[in-house]
Length: 378
Image 1 (cartoon, rainbow, N blue to C red):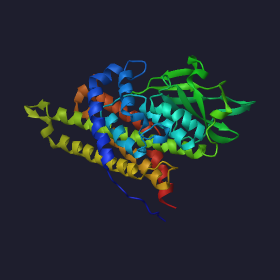
Image 2 (tube, rainbow, N blue to C red):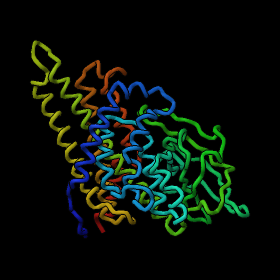
Image 3 (cartoon, rainbow, N blue to C red):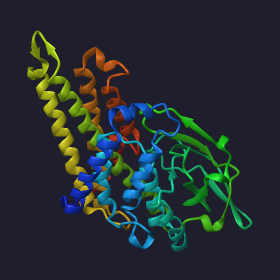
Image 4 (cartoon, rainbow, N blue to C red):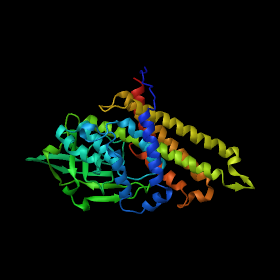
């Protein structure tokens, strides 16, 4: 037995305006030379670029006006994320956005009033959700126990984005045998508790963070009644934003491939004239456009409340399609560049490395399709 689905798809004036300005900004601030220069840096991003993004109001786009944001919703972040992916712009934007959504969807009123305006003003925050390296795991091993007037945490979180520069952490824990979320300030644990992991995508920064021994006031606990649905929504929103970024990078990979096909000659003939290379290049375009259709369908129906089944389906379909489109684009990008494509200096390497990272972040295509089956069929 199948279910009815929402097939709405639109690209409104606000999204078009955001995409136009975002593309101009990212193109000017994140050339391929800029991207490469940041690969070896500690933070992985340019603080001046982050400051410029804050001045444009980007961290507050999905935060309501009542909390110092612009109030355009999650759907308006999709064209922004796509543009950032196209120019591989590295900032703590995605980490801060997910932390803001955690507070918005699961925080108490006082927590929202305290932290959301700060995030909109550029405070770097992040979420710590993984107790292992597997997004498919549904267990939470990190715990919070009562210690008088405080909560004492124990456990380690993996792959915490931008933990090296974050000032606020939203941490998933088990509290009274239920999934919960708690706020932790960076100053509440030693620097030695944060260990950086080098990722295959060197434009990204991720860390293992040991929260053992950290004590926080009970007022730092987000609304326990909303925590389980908030964690679920965070993973779906994270999947959607990763899909948007991956789709943008697929476009960059396609541009890189086409430019090479138009300039490289063999036997006094441009290699782009050979059908064996033309057809896969068109396949990249088709896969990328399919991903964009899924993205903007999800952007059309996303709301500020708990995500419905239709929204979950849209996020999962977008993630599965977008990351596989980028995997294909990155693979062809390397292959068509020949021996040069396997060198670190070739830009195709940046794209295929982003493809490998994007595939695993917030679950791979198999993970999402497995969960789609139970949503599609009774």
